[in-house]
Image 1 (tube, rainbow, N blue to C red):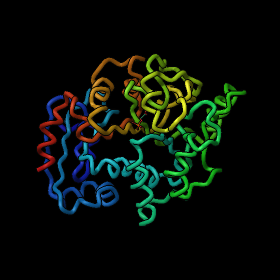
Image 2: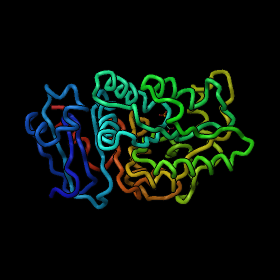
Image 3: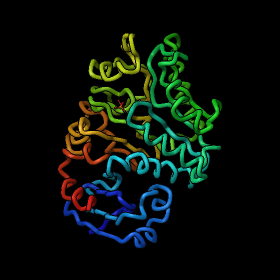
Length: 313
Ligand code: PGA
């Protein structure tokens, strides 16, 4: 039976994990009436599509999984950001770097150009950084400025940078936490999912009570980040927002795309909760949304295949 949130939108399939899945096909008009925000802001291609909502009883009413076509990935996640800004124009957004959020940032920048979203008062807290990266082009700050902060017109005084200077780093991490708290905490935290199950640079072994700190990077993560450091050795340490800090965010959005993330997403959502897969701690968050494309969701036990064939109709 329907329980908890039944929000959904066109061409977007939402599963609230799990038990007795039911699928509710809707016409485009029904979808528009039921979900006016998502419908108009997030899905420019909605007009041609029917809407499918899959709502299931949830053992965990704080957890929502939205499975989308790869082409709709950026729009689906951007809709959650736009929603946060509509309800709070000066929202604090925790933002990641990496390949995963690129289509999300592109979509948001395009939406701002069309007047559908407005970042003029938004504040941004960086999720993580390499230790020692400074202002070099390979720093995450540089990446975020190029891919989002610059195009979205978010000025430096509205950006909380993750410290990276090795000297005095512990005090700088404490100052980062203090500033985030002074801003009232994070309203919406976007996260990528690492192949190790990391969120930010919280690698396996990260405890749930961790705060912003320096962490050693795993060999898998260092290898995955080689593309950011052409011709250079990937730094051995990162600086990251901690798990406890992340869980204080009023809404968490985990972004996962591509088949290579399918197994770790399965372990994140359907395996044991614990430090072996730090992202599994997200299941303790207040309001957690997972936006996954269909390949990334392909190892879930939650019946996505059945859903996929319906949504693709
Ligand atoms: P990716 O990284 O988006 O480049 O896959 C995700 C992460 O490691 O958090």
